[in-house]
Image (cartoon, rainbow, N blue to C red; front, side, top):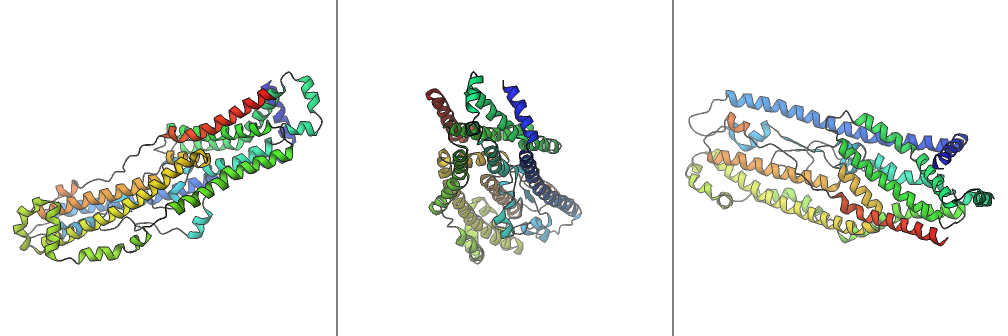
Length: 467
């Protein structure tokens, strides 16, 4: 029966120029949304490739420098000081851009995808990229996630709102009841056929994205499949809700009004109100502190030498036994002042950054609690997490940058104050940057959506039994 109805619906599709036009327009929008994500992905990877290439050349040049350098019998060279070393070889900390960011741009069009690994640069400073145009950020980018979450439901609603009511309004209902053994099964198959037709643009995007992305070196078919399974779950979510509304046997006009109303409620009203509430409950109180960061850095640099020495010895008491040479070499004395200043600056920077992370975590925790009434926000959160483009992914990256800069700083100053020379071997042993891993539990995020889908399914069963 289903294959017969599906065949009939496709024949009807070929006869309806408006439906064909709808599908063509939405298919073009879907491909355009993919193109937008791919364009940004290629721009970001090109930036990172250029920076890595420059870093590799700096590494070879610096390696050659320490291979040929001539050290004096006493005292340190400028090339052995931490600031000079970090300048000669400027480590690039790049965010590992997932190919799935083509499907979900997320935060990748707002924040930096690469930062300098040099200590002495705070995490709130743009290292390589310019600030984005505010007008561009306000308009935003249309990606595949936007197409599926916002546009697909409109296409499905436009094709399915009159699946059941149209027969009554055209006087065909009594004839169908007489000829069909199970009229509810007939309407279910018709609605399923409408869903398949509505999914034509989505199917086109799926195969187009798979064809274009499978050749990318770090492409993961498992992650790709996981992303699309969540998208399919969202599509099924809308199928159940449309089925539930059709069970009430309203007129076509009332069906359309109710479906559009639910679309506005789930995709505009609830997310907008929640965002306003959460922004009010969790304001960003760190902006003024970030603005004053440079003044705080200067105050740390203006401490007396004795205070600097105390800070360094407090951090690592092993420096005390080597303090006899600190009065003989001006570069080492300057190193103590610089190290102390950087330690205090890092301490302040970590405190400020942790406050921002804590505020974000509190806001996200409240947002997760609201997933029970905001399933669309839940779906977007999962998709952006799978694509590594969420705000948490950005904070994991920035935390990794801070941690690396701190390790690099300790390595270089430790060599300056405790070792006799900074050699080629020391340079080769410099710390390498790596991004911190994150733990993602998709299952717990899906519970609210599963609840909504389950309630809709129970509603359909209840109406079916009582009708």
